[in-house]
Length: 227
Image 1 (cartoon, rainbow, N blue to C red):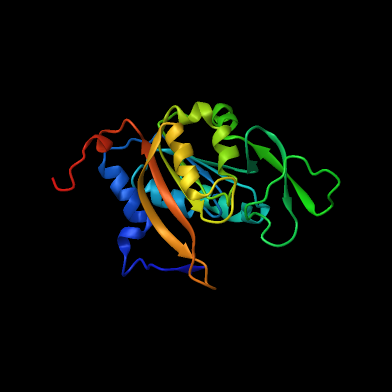
Image 2: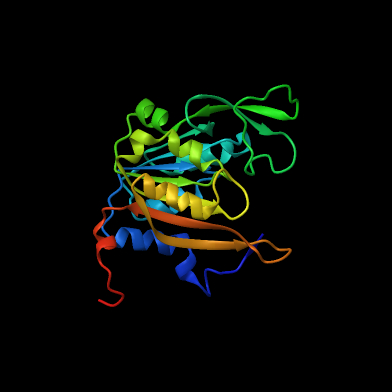
């Protein structure tokens, strides 16, 4: 995939800038929940603005365990779990071949033998298990399984200050226009976007990360463009 931006030429489209804008609006965060955490890069950026927040990182791929263990060793008040994230704890299934985590997840494998079982949890379960306190900041980099994850975070969303969600134009349970409406129904509005990515073959928009804030935040009541 092709990134049509660079931190040097277009720094406003970087997560660092979006998180700084979020903090400048006075958003408070008590705990960070990073789903699809990989090695923890997004949490590291968020911690620059909310250094006292507990961070809980969730990652389905066992291959990231060593990086997350190292991240936990460097960062105070950090926990992580190797698990898929969905509506409720249990087991989910990903394809073994190809882009194994790219928009395909199954709750029932049927008689297929091309799927691998992954231990699964939910955001609400993790928050209760660890006794995490909000307000929460939630980040999803989950390749199309966002709706199931949000359905498993109903209690947590009631005390969530903002979300960062990687959204998609072709794959997933909901494409980005529908996901924006889904978040609106859950009480959140789009406040920012970063890192648009385009398919190399034809430069079609592939994905973009949106930031969502609570719909009642005062910034949405100001309709002026200039101060």
